[in-house]
Image (tube, rainbow, N blue to C red; front, side, top):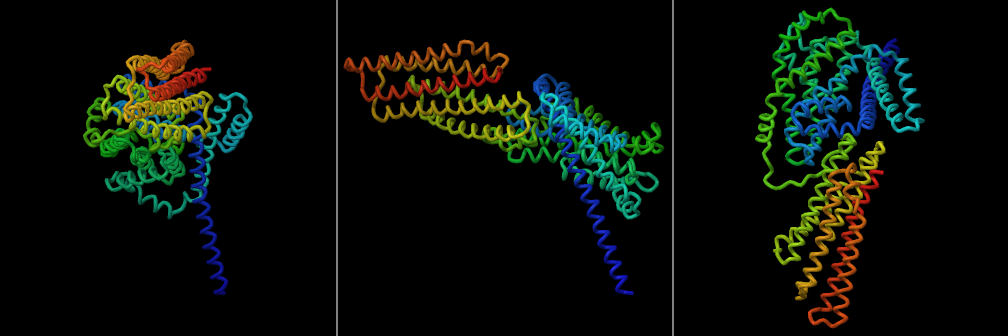
Amino acid sequence: MFTFLAQASALHLITMKLSAWAIIAAVIGGLGVFLLGMKQISEGLQAVAGPRMRKLVAATTTNRFAGIATGTIVTAIIQSSSVTTVMVVGMVTSGIMTLLQAINVIIGANIGTTATAWLVAAFPKVGPTTILCVVGIATIIYLFAKREGCKYLGLIFLGLGFIFFGLDLIKGAMDPIAESEELRRVMSMFSATTADGTFTAWGMTKCIFVGAIATAIVQSSSATTGIAIILVANGSLDFHSAATLVLGMNIGTTITAWLAAIGAPTNARRAALAHSLFNVIGVVIMAPLFPIFLPMADRWFGISGMGADQLLFAVAGVHTAFNVINTCLFLPFTTRFAWLITRIIPDAKVHEIPRLTVLNPLKLAPVVAVEQARKEVENMSHRCETLLDDFRKVLLGEADETIENGIFHAEEELDVLQHEVSSFLGVIMATNLPSDVANRSRMLLRVADEYESVSDEAAALLKQFIRMRKANMRLSDRGRADLITLHDMCRGFAATVSEAFRQGKAHAADLLAHMHPDAAGISARVKEIRKAQMTRMADHDPTIDPLCVVVVLDVLNIYRRLKEDCLNIGEAMLEEGR
């Protein structure tokens, strides 16, 4: 008898453990499917709205309202304030936007992220049959559609289906335990109110802490909002506690920006701090007001008498109201807020070189990630033009050791930057990209490589002149004048293609209309100088040093390669526009 009871008890324990593991597995799996759906919606919407997103990014340069609107719209498109903030960190790092503009976008992102809460609140109205139909039809469209736009539309609806499917898995796991007294006792430990509905400071603190930690772990306030809404729907969590959890979620979601800013330059860390302070200060201001306003909202809207479906929209409403009110409070003080951030994190004592690779390009919208890489390549173009200007001083005999060392140092930095741009774009191009973004990425890879080659040519030119100096060779006045003329032609050619790159493919064709005749003119000038050098040496001109002629011929070859590098840059831009 005792043996039978022992076996029965053991079997009961095994069954309980299996049930617990099944519940945990369903919650984790549902959360994973939910996050996968969010990622697919984000990728699909970014692909469809790519060109518009680029215009929205440009709009941040106008005023604070444009910046906030940009943050709101972009975040509503990509369904994640964390991803928007990582984008902002990247754009501030590469100089695409200033800290003040970044703050405006971050403020707007907190409003835009509430769109997902409303989407999740609509989940109970979507039945399992509808979810499966959406997933099935969307998968067929995504796999078999010929047009790129249709494929990404299918991806959007596939992501939507996965979001609801993930929520359904979580709901299915939590519904059986909703009636458990043990669960109710555990949930009561994290309630913001007492049994009679009175808020307590300790209860609110616990709710805020749990919301912050849970969101920091999954790095998605949308996911934790979805779980909170499910708990409200099955009666495991009361409305006031769910509303208080929202405060903590707004703090926890800032962890993603800090992860992106680790090792990044000063401005990137400032953007991450701005995101954190904005939400923390908002919570500090709003939390004491919850015991006043939530009971008032209850009396006005009859929240306590609402059904489960209506309560879900009430939680989403609190999420939106918090961020809108917080934005209104901060709006007049954004300039002073930016000043405070710069005082907390002062400028670095040494000049910082932007580093793309400290950021995770997979967390950036492809359009913005490519725009960040374009900004870095634009920096390369400016530095190459400066290198050519500095070498002209060497030709004129006006350069000192500092300028010459600066040329070599800049060439090394451009080598590193080209490697980082290539690595960054390589990761982006390994993902599912729209054709226009993929074409732009390939163009940037090629242009970055060519600008690195331009820097190599500038360093090679300097090495030839150092070689002449060590051998006590001197250029004749005519030879120096010829090289200065050739250098100016190459410098002008480089300026033309660089300006075309900065203006973009919309203006490239006009700016590069005479690119091939200009390149042919440089080639003709190289041949003229080479012929003149050889003729004067053949005529035994006493002013000509044969060894110096050899060096000049090497210099001419370098200028020919420099012309080819610039020509390749122009051709890469024209090919992108086709």
